[in-house]
Image: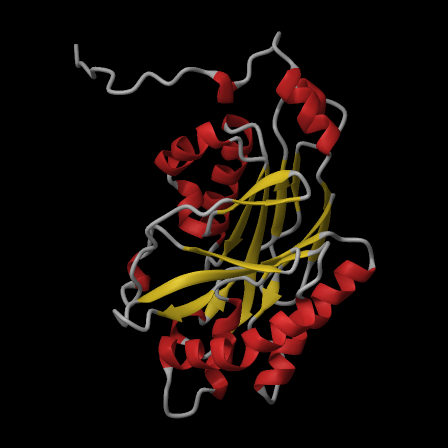
Length: 283
């Protein structure tokens, strides 16, 4: 299985909602035409739509534009039976409660899925956190979408342990190199402790949207540190960039995952029996 991770520049030139969407859609189709099976875009990549939202500014304006205009186009154009795209994240407004969530829209094998961000940063005060981890299957593998700060929370990784996750994909948006470092170092740790692939896609560029006015990032891909992966790069990180688009192509080796799962005579942290509620003492 082939994975393409993309940065996305929210300052991309566009004079309409449709041309902004085209900056994403065309790259999805480019990746698919060149052999990718799964394509991932960063957190908040659709906040760049705020420039077109008129009087209804902010999260709700972007939400309306995406879910009413862009999402129907995406479903029509990008619903492919043997392909997957994670379209970054976008605000979503619950019709009943009016709560706003940071949601990752997903098209996998022609089916629509989503994942809400579970842990929010201080500047996401207008959002409400998600309430569940939603796993889905594609190509014989179990996928999880873990959004930005969520990958930094080890308790979330512990909840994923019993479910045999094969691939974690991390849409992210950070404004400093320290943010990039936190997300990527934790993503690498998750690949080790959960014995799974982890791919990260960061946002880039500058925007007038208050939530994402400055962004830097890169693409990164991590494999388990197990014998089945001894002969391949286990840490692949592109240079950090401030603007522009960057693609990282990665291979998900189903046979290597199967060999790792069968190997019994090596240390594998995902097999360790968790000891919960251990006492903590100070001498």
